[in-house]
Image (tube, rainbow, N blue to C red):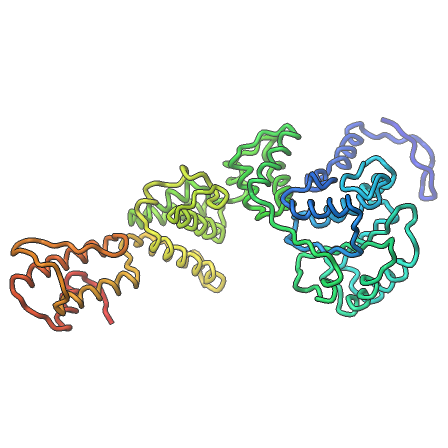
Length: 475
């Protein structure tokens, strides 16, 4: 492809220059690419996901003509605050409005969608924080809209304004001209003064459910003709923590190395994740008290490129899911994986008390590794402790056992048993290896007491308990 150099004062001679065709196409592709979060930004209230209360209220307000002079949108990042503000602004200025469904074809809608409307002014509160910036707004509101029905000011991150700037806005917000509408958006509502809140209609945006984000990602894959596993999309939705923009950003990152086929195995390999299969295997080694294989498996996981912190986070999340399953919760959005993918062996071997102890150990080591001389040694020590979960005795179990022993040895009421018969007391809580052994020892002690009719002192009680359970320290 040959084209003339553009005229100008810096060496242009009007002669022809050569440009390869692939360079022109490459430049076109680079300029044509648009991130998913921008390309799929909602343009109507119907497209806004997870904010049904907000969209229903604003739609009815626009339909009835009850337009407030100031709105305050608060909520987590990436949940649709700025998108809602733009949709509201276009609905106010649409030629067929005010309406909850902007036509999208009139000049006001087209200019608003392109961001070129002179009557929709977006201001970044983080970079316009001073009183002088607010003074400029106060001077501009005196002039009517250029070509639209309303002049709309959208101030994002409004909590970043200074105290003086907020005070300068008070009078303007309270009694603005009839053609002025303010829309404030913030992620930190507690930093907005109460005097500002009282002059605005407040709408609290919520985190978007994981199921909704996963469905939107599936629609995005269908739109682009991309194959994707449900587990991979669900992982992206879970990692976004309720933020659709975060989900789109992570989706673009995964798509860049997935070659139009998003697979959970590839995500684990590229992003350094442990994976449920490795977590099941590691937990099974722990329940079997297999310290050697557990430490070797940890070394294999870390050697595959998984960060130590990520390994602790994933393992803590795994035990959290086990605890939820023990309490009867089977919702996939809370567990992170389908119920059938968790190890049945681990679920049967651990009770809620020991799972809670495992979580305490993992959360404690995550806090401690920041100041540790060797974070890996800290984690390996915790893994050794996790391998002893099956024999670990909780303080409540030990207290209950000692109380039972004291009552027994002080001639507490007990069922009469024939000589040679064994009476097994029923524990008040769920059985554990420690409690089962302890009650067997109590049964044998009762049989001996029934034959000898002897009464023992507290010192003898302590001595016998330590004989039955070597290594037990009673203070």
